[in-house]
Length: 291
Image (cartoon, rainbow, N blue to C red; front, side, top):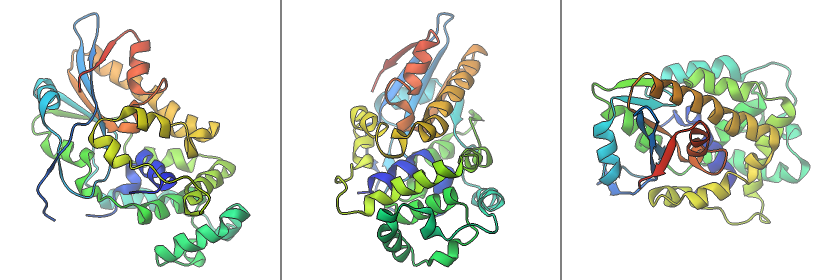
């Protein structure tokens, strides 16, 4: 079970998980799937993914298999997700600034003990982050705290199965990381503080987001999009609502060309009134959950 703050941060940053890679029999899962229909015969699908799992998942079953067969285009957050070297270069280009305060000075006093534990778990020292921007330190510690393996993430599985289907990306690794880099320092510190709050003994038990994803439990995912880092207005707009707004416009553009896109992005982006199904419905599309 991944702790809530780290889990939320990992769920919102696909690029942050592109650093890591068994052979297991795939587990049968039933993730949430929506069908999009437009007044001019436009048709597409929305699949909520999870960026890391402890083992492989057999995700192309039932309605998902039918949707996949009907799609001619795959829309993902990052098309070159398997190019870990490019992601690392993009990260290094943005993550460092000289003359920053010590990392423990960038967290709230009540979270300093939690930071010490997180660094110990990562076999790291505060000095290792001397010139690392706060958002980048948060992503790095989130990756260390995560329990799933990005090699089994559904985003990678979708890309591996794409074959001759056209691949369209919504952001790309550099653009996704740049969203974090543009956050004001105050918001970056809240990002790190919220993630570290999991380490405190007074924090509520974490939700098993992987279990919720496997059974298409969108209600649980929706609850999580209103807590922690996404309860902060600045972080919510930058990491969730604003991205969904931009993505829904790009999905609508694809539908307008006559393509039949299979959109596969993090499941958190499907939940609630600020999720992609709701935003596309507000654009006049009929969006129906089919699994």
